[in-house]
Image 1: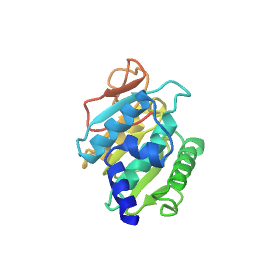
Image 2 (image 1 turned 90 degrees about the vertical axis):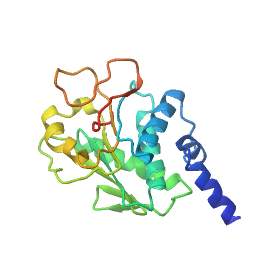
Image 3 (image 1 turned 45 degrees about the horizontal axis):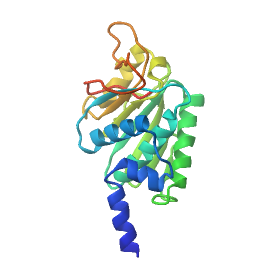
Length: 211
């Protein structure tokens, strides 16, 4: 019976949508599923793509992020992999993101009781970790490395200078996938910008963020 369960878990991990539906107990809408599958594929296959993700308010963006993060942490739990997630503020945005992912991890029967919180801003599943950092101008976040994925939540609220100086270099040596969403910005803005319909666009870059 245990071997059968393990086989099913391994099979579910082949597809983030299957994993999220069976173990996250949620079926993603088509526009959410497109984002989850594209980002997960880029992480797993080490494609180093960047994405612009723009959802309307109250359309389930935060839930997609938490479910995707839970899937990736589970998939990478035997690897020394690191996700970095930057939010415009520590309080309340980073704290809310931590609590949201904790809820999803605790509810997932595959990793229930296996995840741990470290240093107040890191969640770990096995060897895989996600770091929650503030993108506020005064925040000292230099030194983090996004070896698996770099996310910038609500990227339009992160200052361009902060992104260029402190956030973008986190992916410079590893070129992990990155997700970003922001309304049209000024010329020269380093963050990928989506001017089209809500959903997913490939930014064609090696670094960016998630909003």
